[in-house]
Structure formats: C-alpha cells, structure tokens
Length: 197
Ligand SMILES: Cc1cc2nc3c(=O)[nH]c(=O)nc-3n(C[C@H](O)[C@H](O)[C@H](O)COP(=O)(O)O)c2cc1C
Image 1 (cartoon, rainbow, N blue to C red):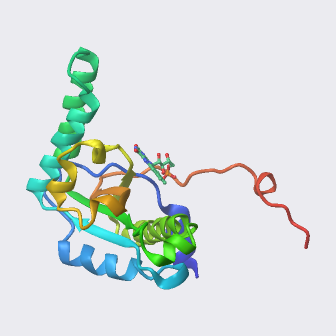
Image 2: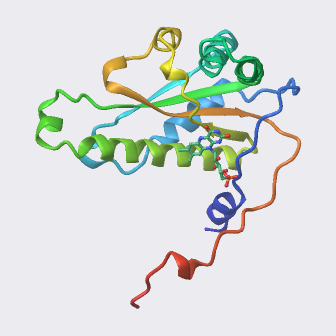
C-alpha cells in the first residue's frame, strides 16, 4: 500500500531534461503501457490508442505545434513563441501520444452516446496509471494538451489509426530530470468531501 501512496503523493508534473543523454528504454515504456491499459472500462471497448514516437516524429510534432502557436505568422510574438515551442517539444527525449478511439457510427454508440464520455474517462485513468508507473521508475513526465492535432499534417505524421473517430487525450512527454518539485499541498478535504458516515 505504501508504494502506491508514495507514487500518488510523490507524482508531479516535471518537464524532462533535454540535455540528458539517458533516455528511458522504449521496451520499458511499452511494458508500462501494457500494464497501464488495465483500467476500468465500461462496455470493454478498449478505446485507448498509443503512439510511441521516435526522435524524427518528435521533431516533426514539435515543428507542427510551433506552426499552430505561430498562427498565420503575422504576429512576431507568436512567431517567437512558436519557435520556442517547436524547439522545446522537438527536443523532448520521449513522447507518447494517447488517443481515445470511439466509433460514433457504431450501433453501441448510437444507442448509448454516453460511451463517448465513458471511453474518454477510461483513457484518463490509463494516463494516470502511466504517470504512476513512470513515478515508480523515476521517469519524469508532463501531460500536455497543446492542440497540435489542429494541424492538418498531424494525423499523417503519427499515422493516426482512425482520425475521424479519434481524439488526443494526452501528449505525455517523458524522460529523466535532475530535480523534482515537492509534493503538492491541496485544499482541505472538507472542501471536497461530503461525509455522511
Ligand atoms: C488533462 C490535462 C491537460 C494538461 N495540459 C497541460 C498543458 O497543455 N501544458 C502544461 O504545461 N501542463 C498541462 N497539464 C499538467 C498540469 O498543468 C499539471 O498537472 C498541474 O499543474 C498540476 O501539477 P502536478 O501534476 O505537478 O500536480 C495537463 C494536465 C492534465 C490532467
């Protein structure tokens, strides 16, 4: 139990160092993904798709996000921010993209549209599983939702399985980091818990 408590309380968002030569072994990431998939999943739809990128694709995704941030290129501040983002993302040591696949035309979804939300919830559980597993392996990670998928070339760059029915849940940047912030202090539990016991 204490391992789990430590992982939950100790996990923080940490930008992985781009300077470290040391990169988590993709075979280990693959194994952690396989474990993380074991999350509650109404109707057993297995909605999550995973894209474990190589450095060329990480660079390309970074470039695409830079272009999204820079918009039409007419605002120098946005252009500068776009360049920074392209470099920050493009030099990330590791990037795992998690999407949620729900076929909106399927008989099941036509009958039960709530599945769209339920599938997304499952994918979020899987992401948290992954973050906790990363924590146990001392892998630093950052969950991002920078809207790179708005770029017309995104689907092709990572060869999205089914672009029309797939939504990006998380871009998980991962790697190693020198330091990590301390555990986060939350507001008192009484603010969020109604306890009738
Ligand atoms: C759904 C989701 C989307 C997020 N998107 C971003 C993002 O786009 N950029 C970013 O810097 N952090 C992002 N984060 C990380 C949060 O900002 C971070 O979890 C929050 O600041 C709390 O810090 P902690 O994770 O260290 O407890 C995201 C987290 C979640 C759960």
